[in-house]
Image 1: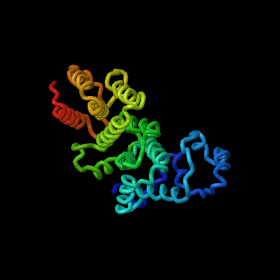
Image 2: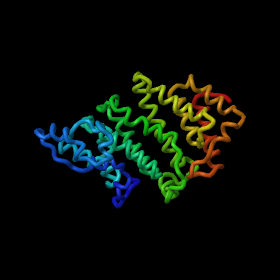
Image 3: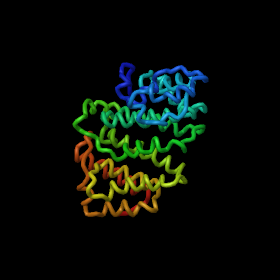
Image 4: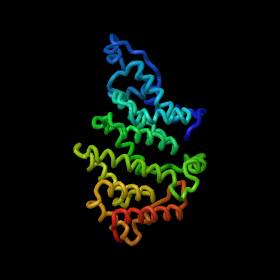
Length: 293
């Protein structure tokens, strides 16, 4: 369990989703009136996202949402496990999905700004549990979550904001060279992106949007990337289409070191450790896909 009950979850919530953790009684006769006056009752941060929460929830559903989200962060180990099991198997979660995805996407956005990797990992874990729930359909809500996953994959973390990160890294993995927190975060985001691409590849422009962003990070010489971004982008492209992108991987690795010189280090490992980890992970990719330099 990553979080103690003393942690203040509201410090790690986007202002847009804090409102969702406040219970609001709803009476069927008042729904139309509440919808017509919605913007007068919400804070400015919520008003700026019209239509983001498209339907009302009953009191029971609001309570369920509140219990699930708080248990994932401030609950005991047992409560967190129970919440994850509900996320992975409960057939009644579909009405909550828009709010859950908003909660996840805005939570990721907030904690990328705060550079709190542990919370980002937990939000990704919640999304991972939802993807295993066979009763949930994501097709109408991909626009809420794909941008957040791409951001996890390619964002540069601001080292000036880092505080108390080494202890967080050791909590996840004492052998930090085995897999740093940032590399673990990017791999989880990569797996989730590939999941959505595989299941919804028929949606117009979805695959093209994902691959174009990743290729631009790899090819554009004006864009700064770290070793973990380079690896995660290559890994994701290969998982999406090995035949199409294996040549891109080989061309980048054969570029006489020029591409490697543009890589910078994330804050949690030094340059030598980054290079070592990058070489090892790339070697694993080459072996997995039977590619030769």
